[in-house]
Length: 156
Image 1: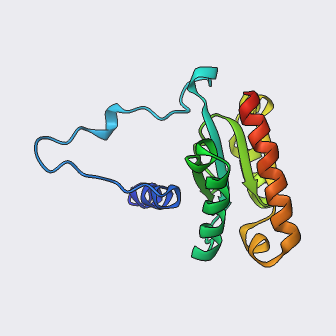
Image 2: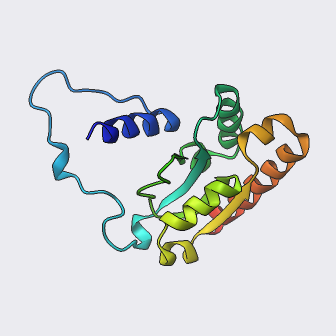
């Protein structure tokens, strides 16, 4: 049971979300909310973009990726960011486009994403964040991947 709140806090941290708590009044029960991926994915339920990252990326790597994503506008800057842990991704939101950092993360996405959602989505595979920080050619591939993702998001 304790792994669920830890995972939620880790995912919120990766997405750059600061959780706020209501000080006065009754707190609403979280059990009434349903996960986004419970039912079949409809076109109206999709988020514009999801970024899939490897677990344990350094602050420098995340800073570089955040700046690159912000450079391509609000759709990529506000994209949900998920880390691939030991047990995979878990619940992946349905999206029009996925930006995947590394082949291991692409395999995890393919394992956890329903086939119908995957066939309708545009998936862009780029190098791992560690390679992007170290290699100028990987930075060019990231930039080209972001351009491809931007075209896919504009067309969607």
